[in-house]
Amino acid sequence: MRLVYRISTALVALVLIAAPALAVEKVRWKMAMSWSSTLTPFATAPIELAKIIEEMSGGDFTIRVEGAEKHKAALGILDMTKGGQYEMGHSASYYWKGKDITTVFFCTVPFGMNADEQNAWFYKGGGMELMQKTYDKFDVLSFPGGNTGVQMGGWFQKEIKGLDDLKGLKMRIPGLAGEVFAKLGVNVTNIAPGELYTSLDRGTIDALEWVGPAMDIKMGFHKIAPFYYTGWHEPATELQFLINKKAYDKLPKEYQAMLVTAMKAVTADLFIDNFAGSADAWEQMKTEFPNIQVKTFPKEVMQAMKTASDELYDEYAAKDASFKEVLDSQRAYTKKARAWTNISEYNYIKTLEELAD
Image (cartoon, rainbow, N blue to C red; front, side, top):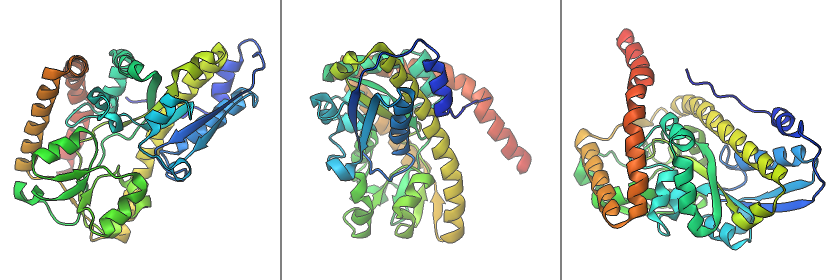
């Protein structure tokens, strides 16, 4: 049974501040997000982190959180954190695949692990160490920043009935999934979150994927695209906290402990908020917009995407030792974890469905 607890500010504070009194040292940091400051629950995690840190330190350690509407560089978070313009960032690791393809694994990859499996890999299967090994190249620290679970496959203006319907389609989709679709003839682009609705509405793109009902309802995609496809490409999308390594090393040990503990707390909260929000948002969507059609890609399309994914993995692994190292780690852990997933989570849902028939 999965037990996920919302860790209150007070509880986290009690755990850490029960230790000897902190030496007073004023620290003022800034954190940049890839999202606007109103885009919950993504923005909620960094904002709550800053509140926890301020309360735990008695106001001596503060973090000013700035959304993309402020810094105007939604896809520049890694560079700004590395360069020291911001001590922290909140983003998604697969945005940096152009800098290092291995970064995709620390967000999610097509046909990869689900959220439970991926969390276990991070914390118990060597994933954290492999992630930091990758980000050492950028002189930053990387920590999990909140998981969305399985993301939806996207909003489409037309139904996808076969592979021919993908050819020439203009779609916003990031990460390795974009490369998979490109192999199948899709014209792929990556657009900053704040420009997505306008791009779809004006026909600049024909389709896009974002997250799921909790996030999508705020963007309004359901008003302009009737076909909502189920996921395959992002089965466990983990956001990330980035920290400038030099800034972190200068922190007192107590502040470092606060930061690491608070990040883990708000990461758990984001998963809870997104799941609950999606349940509520989908109920609203299907009631207010009955024209929405939930679709699953045809089997021939899914098979082609799976084949293209496997080919990509093998191609990158053949030329990049770091990519192969992480790929091998994830594949090995997935094999072990999926056996238990099938017995537990999958079998439970399958049994309930059979009883309902």
